[in-house]
Every structure is written in C-alpha cells, then in structure tokens.
Amino acid sequence: MSLYSFQRHQRLLTPSQYKSVFDGADGRVSHSAFLLLATKTQPEQPARLGLIVAKKHLKRAVDRNGFKRVVRTQFRLAQHSLVGLDIVVLARPGCRELDSRQLAAEIEKYWPKLVRRCHNPSPDQPAKGKPRSTQ
Image (tube, rainbow, N blue to C red; front, top):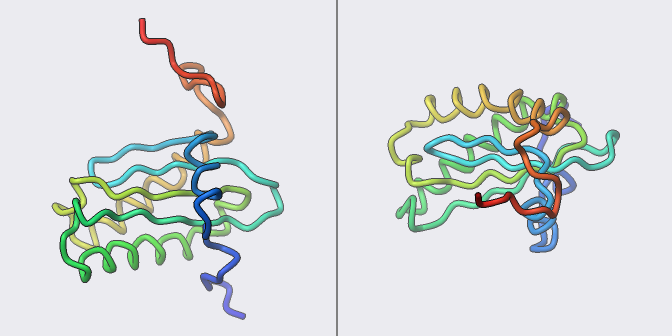
C-alpha cells in the first residue's frame, strides 16, 4: 500500500459526515478561492477529506474535477500532519482566478493554519453549537 494513497476510509462519504463537520467545526480557514473547515476526531484516526465544488463557481466539469484533483493531491501529501481531523474544502467564487499551481500552493500553505486553529481555538471563535453574538 502506498504511503500517500487516498482510500475510501479517508473520504467523507455521507451527508451526516459532512453535517458533523459543518455543525461542529473546530477550525476554519478562509481564502477567496476556498473555505477549509475541520473538526477533530480521535487522535489515532486517519484524516478524512470531503469536497464541495458547485457548478455555480466552476461551470465546466473539467474545471470542477481539476479543482478536486489538486485538493486531493495536496491532501494526500499532507495527510500525515492532518491525522485526527475531518476536513471539508468548499470552493468559492475566487477559485476561477487560480490556476492549478497557485491553488496547490495556497492549499499547502493553509493546511498548517487549519491544524493550529483546530488544536488551539482562538478566543473569538465560538464554542461548538453556540452562535456568535450579533452585538
């Protein structure tokens, strides 16, 4: 088995798995091209990845598949530093402006930030399940 494979058990597969990341995000990192959300799982569990790329942001299937391919590749290369996290990558309108090399560089740069935010949440980040005050 390859050290950098991407197998079925490393993917978020069901709507309930995605919902648990959205509802209980321990860390989030925002970029004009994507949003990274993550929630902590058991420390010994392998990292799992879910991708959401809407037709609204990338019209052509080849572009959506290219976005997903780049993110999966960066995930495979960084998976050993992401252990114990369930991660969702959500494409945003700015993803059209980045070519695959730029996207790969940005994703690679943002993985460590996501890990830091999951393990050391900032004081202004709301606790799980508690909405931010709108004052």
